[in-house]
Length: 377
Ligand SMILES: Nc1ncnc2c1ncn2[C@@H]1O[C@H](COP(=O)(O)OP(=O)(O)O)[C@@H](O)[C@H]1O
Ligand SMILES: [Mg+2]
Image 1 (cartoon, helix red, strand yellow):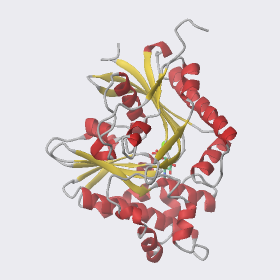
Image 2 (image 1 turned 90 degrees about the vertical axis):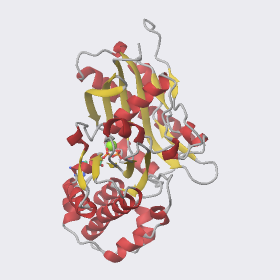
Image 3 (image 1 turned 45 degrees about the horizontal axis):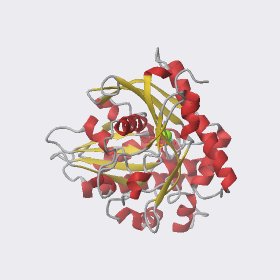
Image 4 (image 1 turned 120 degrees about the horizontal axis):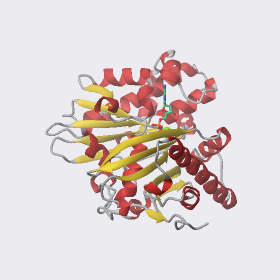
């Protein structure tokens, strides 16, 4: 039975590729309740390859691409199996389906023949987990003229909208995206620009650490106004929605082409990159959600104290806080969205919001990859 009390697993690795997030949820009256969650670490070498390809630093021939797809599929299967083994008494047979986002390697929603590409072979996941898998969620929206992203706003609206009062949900992942929940119930959303992706990359290059814990490296530097202005001059920031972006656009080469960096103190650059996120998010909130007095934050950036403090200052007098304050784990909201999208697919219900993605209309998203029949070898 899929209507009520059905169990689903959601899997995603975002643009930060920091971990494969897995969540087991039960849907009650259509709303997800989290039963278990697990952040599955990427093997370091594989993560490096994924990031290099995603940032355009390494090319893939077709053989390497095919193998990478399968390799990522196995990692996603490992994440789901670990969740099942450590997620309480649930067995694979009790799970109706897995919604797997995969790992985005390219997202090119603009221009001729727009496309979006996620790897992580869903057949491998279905075979190893023996659970039906729904995957490839973004392409139907792109085929319908949409951005294929962001797909989170529908779930944000279901879980976090407040009656008669505008709110903003801010997801601080590798890229930052904003969901505007208007007082009249309408929903909009778009990617504002870079968040953790650039901070991670600069920190790795200059500190050898995969991310700037608590924003300490950024806090040790000074914001460089000239560099900040040069970065904010990128046309993406003033492009009207619908819009979405990724690591293939906002990466260290993008930074290097916007301004000469060689003479700059790396800590000052880190401080400036943090401020770039703050300024671009604050401008987007001011322009697109002038009435919203609450900004609820999810995604890994919520743990970056420095980033949260600066965002709070820039968005004042609006209140800024984690979605945890509304009972929603900020680290697993995105994975939950893919469990929800899998359920939408099985119920033949749309997963996109055309007002967000710009698609011609609502679309049922994703394709189903069947598990082996029960009892088969
Ligand atoms: N304690 C912390 N201090 C600073 N940054 C953090 C902290 N914890 C997580 N992050 C950031 O959050 C990122 C992961 O966020 P996430 O929402 O998973 O992004 P994505 O959806 O792109 O994978 C990490 O790469 C890191 O930059
Ligand atoms: Mg992540």
